[in-house]
Each structure stands twice: as structure tokens, then as C-alpha cells.
Amino acid sequence: MRWVKRNRLLLLFAAVVLTTLGAVGLGIVGIVATAGALLGGGAVVETFAAFLLGTLLLVGVDVVFSVALVRELARQASVPKSERVAGALARLEAVVPPLASLGLSEMVAPPEPTVEERHEALTRRYVDGDLTEAEYERELQALLGEAEDPDAELLGDPDIEAESAGADAERELSRE
Image (cartoon, rainbow, N blue to C red; front, top):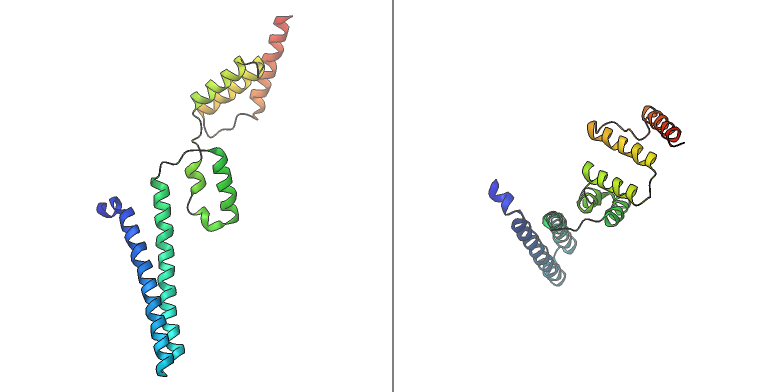
């Protein structure tokens, strides 16, 4: 089983090549057999139908192997992460549902920032003057609360907002 996993890409490529060659070969043999039936007075419709059905079956299997090969190549490839590309792929997956099974939008989506990275970004915004002290403390409190309990959404928590409003009022009084 490990050998199959290690050589999955090679096996899928071989399957695509073999099913493509089989479909092309069966199609050619079907054309020759149908032409022979036409010239020899045999059962043309039955001959044509049998080879057409076999060729279509092989083409279907070839498509399945080709999709699996492309998916495996995409999974193993070093794909750059981009929020814009992930959004575009997510919209495409919404329009074409079979693409959603490939999970391409998740593959190119950048990872969620860690709490430390979000804290650094918040501090940078505060230092740059994009946030007031009250906004910084409110967002920092929410971030710290989220770090302690990742399942809880603290941004809209009325208790935290009331505490921040009280702390803001105290700071304003102390400044005056």
C-alpha cells in the first residue's frame, strides 16, 4: 500500500496514457470494422454501436484518471498562496460545483494569521496612528480573549464593550 501511495503520480500518469491509447485504438478499430461491415454487407449499426460504446467508456475512464492526475499534481505542486486567487477559485467553484470537490480554493488560500501575527499587525496600526488608544485596547482585549477561547467571538460581546467604554470614560476624566 505504501508503494502505491509513493508512486501515485506515476500510476495515474500510466493510467491516463493507457486509457488514452486504448480509446484511440478502439476508435480506429471501430472505424475499420464499421467500414468493413459497410463494404461486406454485415450488421453496420451493431458494429458501430459496440465500438462507439466501448470507446466512450474508455474516454470516460480516461477523463476520470486525467482529473485525478491533475488533482494530484496540484496537491503536490508548490502553489503560491494568494487571497485574490483563492477568492476567484471559490467563486468558480460556486458556479461549477464539481470543481469544489478538488478543493483548489483552499489550496491557494493563505493560512490564517496566528495570534502573534495579528497582535503585531494591531500594534503596527496603533503605532502608525490608524487606531486610537481606546480602539487598540478594545481590539487587543478581543484578541486576547480569542486566544484564550478560540470558539468564543468576543468582538461583539457587550461585557467587553461596557468595560472598554468605562475604561475610556476613566481615561478621559484622568486626562482632564
